[in-house]
Image 1 (cartoon, rainbow, N blue to C red):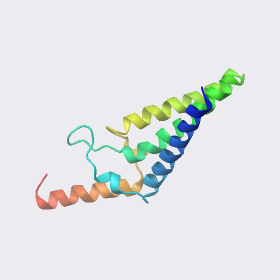
Image 2 (tube, rainbow, N blue to C red):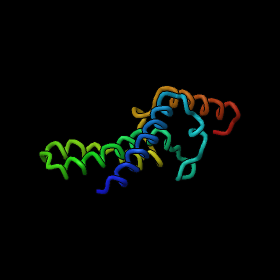
Image 3 (cartoon, helix red, strand yellow):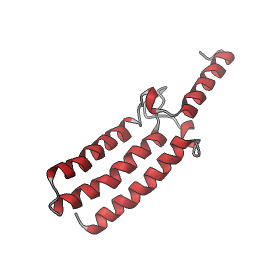
Length: 122
């Protein structure tokens, strides 16, 4: 892998991880208002950015470690979390399990559900 491609991946990963951290901590909440890819199904792309960003940070490190002759176990220790992060990032565009959502997201969803019941929408 060229240094420039790895550098771009690291820069993108850092930006994504930072945005995902802000989403998890509740400092960035606007993403929650956007609809998901599947109608009437809540998606969590803001939360998924954390996992995608971490995987973008780990992938170039794995390639560089493999190119430098690191042991296969060390490369696997970088590749497996990178793949898992990518899968979680993709999954977050359609769904995330309840235990992966922070408390402020669960509270917001519960308030929206109660408000919809009060209005008679449910």
